[in-house]
Length: 386
Image (cartoon, rainbow, N blue to C red; front, side, top):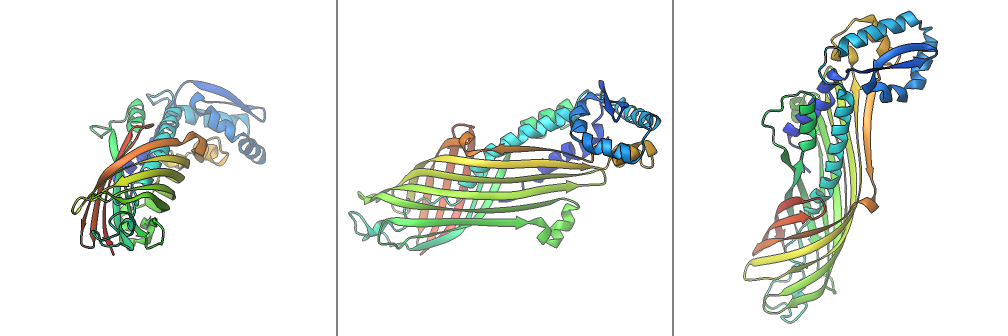
């Protein structure tokens, strides 16, 4: 799978890392730690509460007085009082959580664009009425598969607009690309074939690319496979073949973006299993095909931000802010996570397209549609088949 377009990564970086500079906003809530009180932005109460144990331990270990707490409160309120948005932390995290919902729907669709073959069984012509006389018997094939699925980033743009960011004419819809090598083996005494696909990519392994990304990185691993059994094989003059399909795929990866203010990270892994059926015919060198699949998917997506608050607030050397950081009143990390089980990710798909077979060269152009989440996808493959 290729990198998510850098324009999208830039937007995520803007929201996760740069936008942490506008995390303070009115109104405030009074919180008590070890008998000491402090007014904090209501927007941050939940994340501060999550760190209550660490805060109270730090205040105890450092014998913190109310006067020191008051100085932290003054520095914090001075920072957030200059802001226009009342709840930027909540707005940002909810927008990113919405985007994770989008990703968990898109990832299974990107996976399914890999290893799509026009012929419903590569060795189909050994069986059926024509006895393999009209089409060369194929035993093995492999090549490159590329695909795209629609990626709706409207939730990120809406969040950015709510926070007063000027996103200009940034498009609400991008594409999530895939690229993989795949192979398929036939030559069995029954109408059966197996397919495999694989892709891995890590920007840190390419020094020139790692230097160019300057603090950002991307890694990805994808592996999948399927088995097809034809219950109608090479019928009629058009070599009609219909196969039942069962398969699965697994993806994992992560994106890291960092600068002097913050380090933002997004990690994901998805597993998808599917069953389906595909029909194909052959007309001279053309192989039209159509199929359907029922997907069962599981996704886990998480994000986190490690914030350098003194840089973010432009208060390097400020003792009060340094104390707020050291005592975890300004939490060094905030994060979110989405776990989506198989039971909540059952979706039907239709797909189809046309192949072109000339000698040992096989080209396949396909399209796919997810009816539950209204996600269109497309793929193109170029293979050698022997």
